[in-house]
Length: 158
Image 1 (cartoon, rainbow, N blue to C red):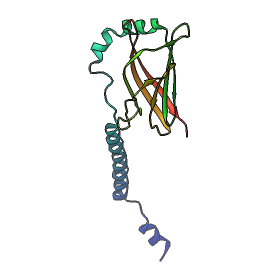
Image 2: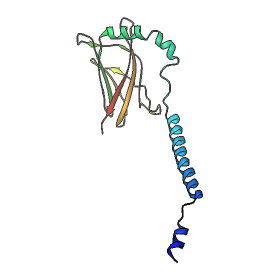
Image 3: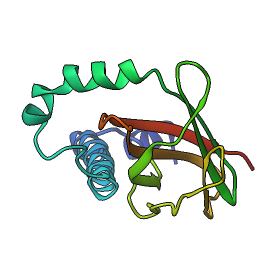
Image 4: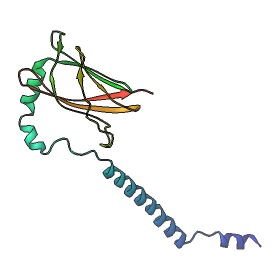
């Protein structure tokens, strides 16, 4: 076979370019659809039923919560969750726990409600937490009736 025949066989035609163009866009569309499906499947849900209604008292609620002057010391291990609350003077505070949820940031599949027990200095709950990032979403009630809400990012090391 001569050089001219070899060049004729390896020619880039309009059909080749069109096929590459369509194939490239097909890959982009397939990746986008896959990412969108996974994003919707792993969406953990809403934080509040109505953000507008929640915003009406947000500043007042935050000011009341900040006025408590509480400091939280939270530790999470593979088998225990410990929550200690200290007042502005450093003294131990024993608030009532209204709700508590320990879960992953990206899914509700691993959410658990810890069964806290008071040990004299802190709230302690036996849990089974695998390594990785966790969130503790907690609402407590002060003795004066002030609600204290917090989302605390935690990490369990390997």
